[in-house]
Length: 340
Image 1 (tube, rainbow, N blue to C red):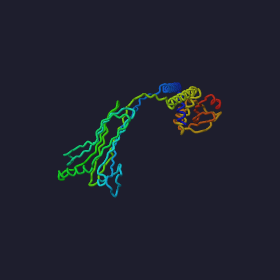
Image 2: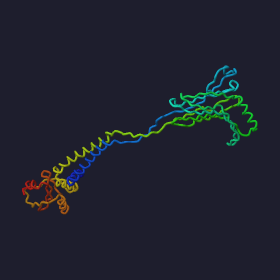
Image 3: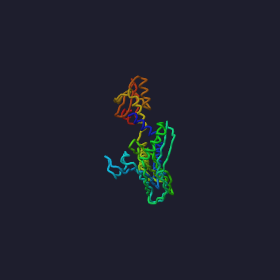
Image 4: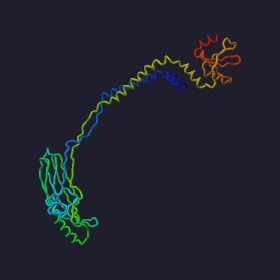
């Protein structure tokens, strides 16, 4: 109970300061709640607008011109993983480019077949054949074209080049598609380059010929967020609680007996020197009143005696051979009890 007594004594001794602090903090919390409620936060966000997509692809296919065990003559093979010269000596590329349909788009298409000779990572030969080149303005959102490559003739050219180098270095073929686009708002380039492999009597593309680009504009705008009820409500609740505590603490001083609290604190601190008992009444001994319990405990320590606590009259005493040293919170009541 010592801590509780000390807290009550501290409140009693600093009563006005504590009440003023509670009122001040409570008012500040209410003002803060009003400020949060009346001034919503504003933040800048970035949005993507006028989003437009540009994409292109070249799908390979081959017409079967010779009857084989695999395919029927006249059959068209689309997007296969491998083709055979014995069945289809030529490959067709169907180019399709998709752009926004609500605006005119200027397009420049170029489909090229490139042969490179490379040794130790260094290029020593290059030839480029343009398969398709077109410049058009598209208004319906789509451009299509088709071009056929004689793979059998390309294989013969590749064999001639390899024979010319007598096995020094390597030759590789690449298919490259480049699409340049331009609108009132955007311009850019779509590029796709993939290896074109001729391996003996078969040929194939190692990857899909396709490219895509999404264009947009960044626009910043201010967004006002409504006040958060948890924020202003929390401030308001804390403010009201503090003001309520201040009202309760305002009258607390009248209900606290500081002298009694000090006595309780001293009692707790010197509890080992105090014993419960009853004072002798109508005694012939001389009664000597001590001003504080702490002074009475000092008398007990000096005389090597114990302090007797009589809870009936809430009084303390040290009984000596001829004197009774005593202290009582209610001194009048104790004097009447002791008949002095």
